[in-house]
Image 1 (tube, rainbow over the protein chains, first blue to last red):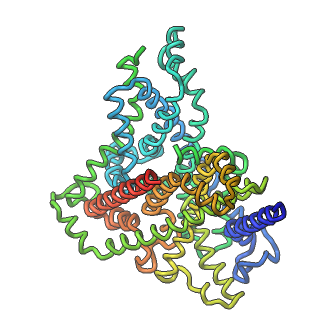
Image 2: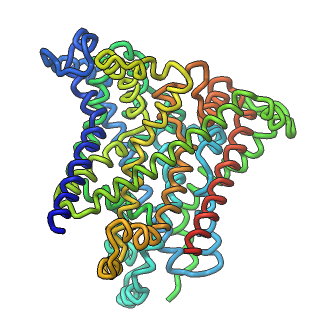
Image 3: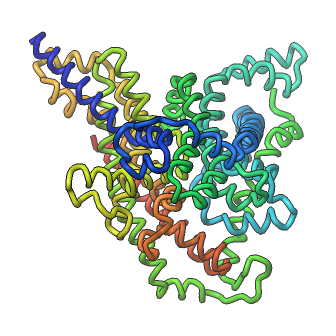
Length: 274
Length: 287
């Protein structure tokens, strides 16, 4: 019996390892070919480079204007995350602390809006924001706040149910106002929900292509997915440069994943299950 | 100690305002546009149901709906089978490697659809040709150059991307199965196979509700991957509905017509989600 169990375990580890290799093979191929010369890729895509070179990287980095592009992505993702965490937690606090018909209706409104696919509001969104000259980074962050608000409000309302109201009351008796209660007492108790909200939305905002592509039309404000897309259009026949660009574009998120792996996976799972 | 009226609305205001101008107002305006001839700058006339009538004979749009439906069905099956298999694998007591496996399987999910699409474009175009030269198998030649390989290319890309995500959901349900139940089953003489199908499986049915809902609606809304991998080609034969809507709106500038497509798209997605939730919820209570 024990032997059989050990066999079972080895079997599983073996299968898991084979599948793991298969799963990262695409990343491996992109990386290996990004350190070949143009002729090297032409010769063979599967073999290791005969003379590895890093010379594709400075060119791709420059063509992507990566320092600026990276900064744009950070500003847009960071700004939108800030808005969403601040404002949706405030809204959820109000909804959960004053149960009333109005609160139920508002909560229901958030729920219904979750069903609206982006494509069905995309055209009017552009005309509304265009009419007030807001097709820019600020406008984009406001759009993300609206589009992401439903899920974030849900998660926060759910989490606040677990915090006793007596806590608020005690603080108010001690002389805090509502905002102070929210800021100093409630928000710090919602750290794990905040992590979930940040993770879910950051992955979305960081990687989003469609919305920025119709909102941002100044080249100097392109985010990583936008710039990668245009770069690829120009260089798709020059795989050595295109692949180096893909690696550069992926590095920030892969590095972050290595450090925050546990938070990211826990955040995803909380967001989906609750 | 209730919330004062003014404070209540102040707390709600920013989010509610954003919801209003980003979703609710555009939604109603969108419904209105779908009944007009609109070029993005001005509404030239009210056309009633004409846009919707035109849709019925728009063969490219109807084709894109069928293509998207096929893509979604294939992807949902692939993602859920592989995602569940991954979840079962990493919840076996394998020690530290479990975490490593989980990390690797999840990784594609962190990268944006545009980059993933380009990665697979390279694989299908260049690496597959390399494999064909190496093995002599013609199966690996000409990928993305016709409808069929374009279709399966998109499915492979999306399954690779989403399986790790769905795995995470199944894992959290599998971990919530009470240990006592499994021990009791073992004492009663159940083998691994039986205790999975008879004990664990019924308890993770709610995971199917969540996973099917997520994968189905995500598959229907795919755009970035489609754009980067095939761009709808060859000759629009791998064009999904979202791309068809986008092109009608921003390339042809026929925004009123595009908006009527978008409304049909909304209705289809809502119907699918409601039906799917209804069926799985019913299954949940039956068990």
